[in-house]
Length: 376
Image (tube, rainbow, N blue to C red; front, side, top):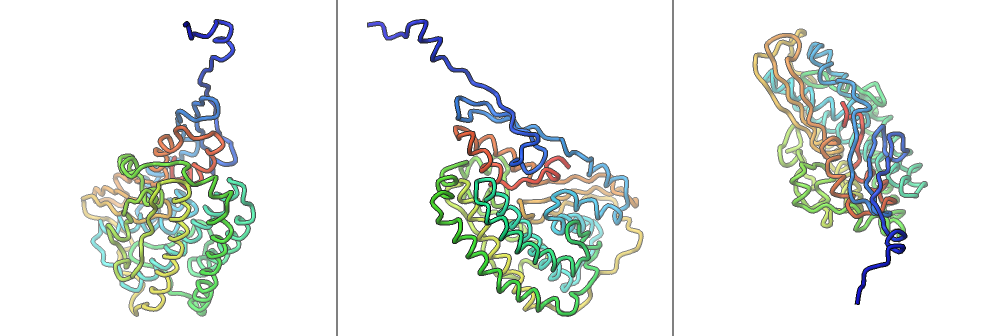
């Protein structure tokens, strides 16, 4: 018996893969990003990322400025995590100089870094939930982020692009009453995280949209060089604060949340748990704040010896590294940035295979990219 379809039926049922552009001005791409999707019906069978729309030449820009003048430039990378960006850059310069930072300055840096991590995760939580359809969470997350930004503004003088740290330490001690306000916020914020979880973690619709979606295995996550919550959700223990300790982090007791399934839901849970750990770190730093100087002695004109240095921090998106080459002059010979958003974006193709096109917004949101850091 011949099972081949008649020619007229073959013409009707024949299907072809199609290409669809998502972006570069799609509201759920969190910036100017274009994903060229190859679709078989509603299933994604391939993804090609097109980036570069926000390229500003930050690395080359820094090479035409003195070491001090270049400091504010790096706030423009992950503009939701400017404080941690600054820590990465000044840490690399301090490593070149061989400068030892005063203990008190390191504690203040840790507190500001973790407050910035909270602010970044809150923006991620609100926008990620909004993309999937949960509007209320955005309003609650922005409410708490405003309190965090107020604290950073009182300490650093700016709300978004803080230019947080000078080379050698910090500029100021905490203003009068700041510590008490911070402690009060942290106490209230623990309950707010519970509220977010009550809205989402057990929510049937949220679970249906995130569990089993965007899976990436432990092996693939390592092979693609992922980092941050995107990596740890695949049950890989790597956090720069623990794995390559820096600043005052070895002084504090905190845990690194891990996922088991490597899907959108686990990436959500990892960041929720990370916020709890950030609160824990800040409270310990406030309790154990040492006395001492705020800044090491650094020459007004910085000319590091000829050499190179690499310094890495745990950014809100993952491992953020700065590689600087000095030729002994006032300006760096070469600056290169290892940005987590750029590297994590590589994993999107693997995560999207055989997913529905409707899941793309959940996938992009789950890796928490900022295009300023992707394009640089």
